[in-house]
Image (cartoon, rainbow, N blue to C red; front, side, top):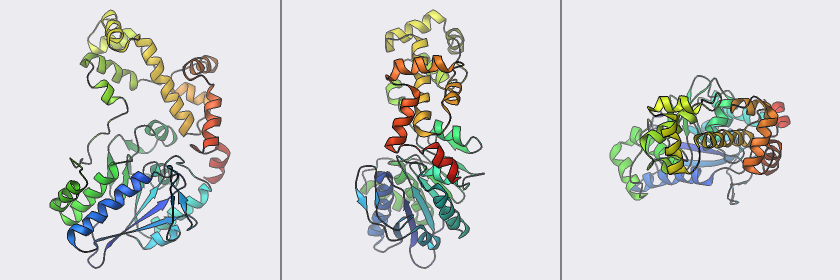
Length: 336
């Protein structure tokens, strides 16, 4: 846990990566800004840094001027690496070296949005709990199977601070404020931000389809949750029905009534969407992506994928590399 310094403000440095998530960074900064305003003094100070010290462009196209290179963070109390559409930027080895120098300076480290990937690839999350946005979590777990990546809104594990992105930055900073200045100040900041509830660290993220699933019957939700947790080794419809306490025919009727699709087709779509996430956000070979989503034949995987997304798995990967949404495997392997 980070303690406020006895003299002077608590300094939080933000290392910005090209195409980083501006919302994640600004949400954290504005939470600290309001703390300063309510207390009438600067208890927090922040710095915007980049690897080169030059300007960085956010994922929404806004260009941000920086105050210096990552070496400035060696004098900070907490250093957040802020990424977004490019979780493993180039030159990767230079990012790793800079982050490791900051770590050796005994600065607490954090990751906003996909910054968790960069910390993990630098070996700075080994033995720590962390979290990342639900959309990126399958890719993260595939790339870093030895790291405990939870589905929490944010994670604080000793001197490591990670968030699931977006508004979760507010919750994380409010938790730091609570530790350093008390719950009353944190509540007052939340009120200023129209943040109706401060989420605790043990709260799970709402997955992309949770809002959609909420009004569905409990048995149907249970069946979908079973499918989601068994993508690598798909279960038969009869097995899923048995685990939910239904007959296969009853489960078929539920899917048809509420989703207008058979259980098998819905299951296939879940597997293919997971495959697309892995193709977009990891360097995992296409054959391994197929195996990780329950396909024993690469040709059948390609056929199903093309029917679902009107492009081949290799086309999805090429497009992702060209758009900068993932690191080219040749670049990634050279930087580690």
